[in-house]
Image 1 (tube, one colour):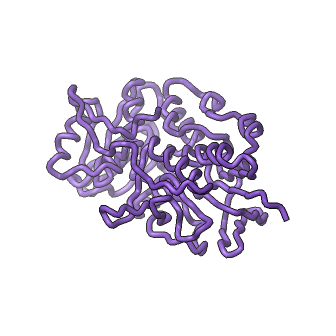
Image 2 (cartoon, rainbow, N blue to C red):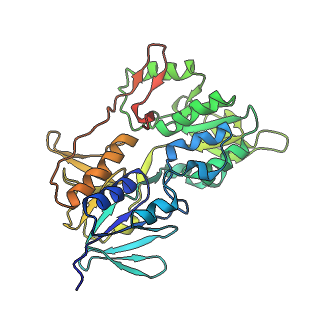
Image 3 (tube, rainbow, N blue to C red):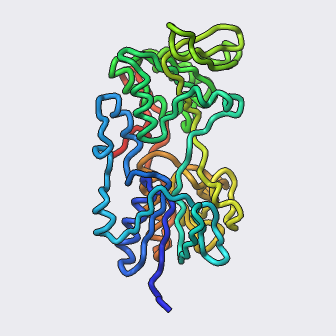
Length: 346
């Protein structure tokens, strides 16, 4: 029997690619397989606002070309979906019925956009921003000087808003409890941060002041393409409506795997799940913090990349504990603008 270990990484984002690279360096004799639902090789989703600056060639968004994976002996399985994990037999099942055996598995499947249930019926009328094609669709739908309505206003949405303003578009934020997510802003500090967004050029409507969102409709002929109605009867018209209510871990395939799940995969400080052969990294996991006696999500490009590297080192026996490397405090700059450390991608 072969003694070559097979490390399987699920997900091809920042955490997954950093983990695969580290595994190859730390365990050069092993097999490394990366499985992703994405059709594109690794690209930085934080770069997607560049589409609104005229960058439309997907090849310019790719960080690692296909040749990188061949040279580093990383088997990249694109457009491939994992549907189940059998941790007892250390196998995973793919949607097309293939079964893959693993010795260790790292779950770095990331997260998808969260949409509150009360808005789910209006999903077809909203533009997402989770991938390259989504970004192209939004850019195509926004005319020069067009009006984008952002719902919720998490940090991903506010980052996009900065680019939209820079490129001559109008932005209205329909603010609510998810504004500034994942930052925690004290109620007494919120008005100052909202005022800072307005100084940046973002028009802000507090949804609660209008009774909440009642519905989204296709605009009438000759009018704006989208119409947003509030419960007090007032309306807001724009070219696109985009939801930014935070994210939810992509974990359906882990149900029944034997690894404990709360909102995300629960991992110890070494990023190992309750199954000895399975680790997790990135937006998909909650890390045990002894000082706070709770499991905590950590976000931001720098934290996610560091988790991928740490998990890989621990898979090969490093035994190191997680230490956050990125400040999570929302900042008011001296010139009165909002800045999130999650907007720092280098």
